[in-house]
Image (spheres, rainbow, N blue to C red):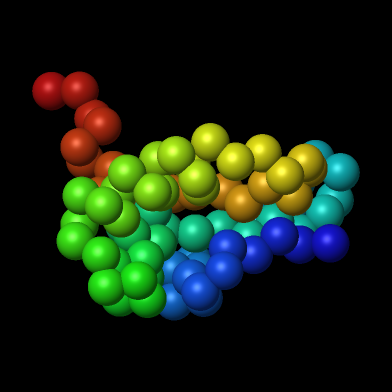
Length: 78
């Protein structure tokens, strides 16, 4: 069964296949945070804190969603 993050359909980038040939949802981290802000009426920091604690660290087995930082340039070394 493919795991989806509640109220974050707008953050879906697509689907990938894991090593067990199971479909896995692929989400944009920035879009998840935006969805959390909109759905809950939270400020940015509150949404990031909730994301870090409740989503980024979640492990739901082999179909744990893939989380992609679209603003990847923040992670590139100069």
